Image 1 (cartoon, helix red, strand yellow):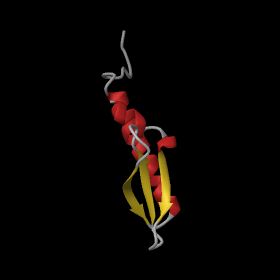
Image 2 (tube, rainbow, N blue to C red):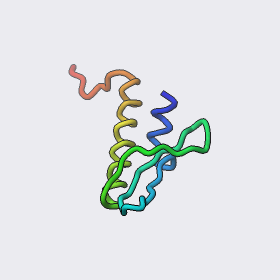
Image 3 (cartoon, rainbow, N blue to C red):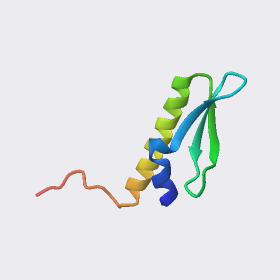
Image 4 (cartoon, helix red, strand yellow):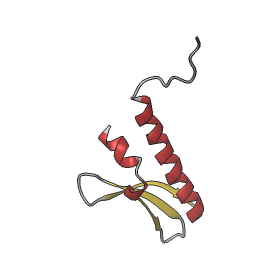
Length: 75
């Protein structure tokens, strides 16, 4: 759960440019100062979209641990 919370925060992500011109998304390790490669994209926009998708994914996983969400009740 702590890792999901860490990965759901955009401040724990960065984009680096590789020598071949591609952009790599990286996430920080909450236990130390290391960064870990996650994806590679051709454009910086694509890299940021990948990060936003990961943040959305982990946010939904965290929300799911709270149990079912009541959408509508009837009387």
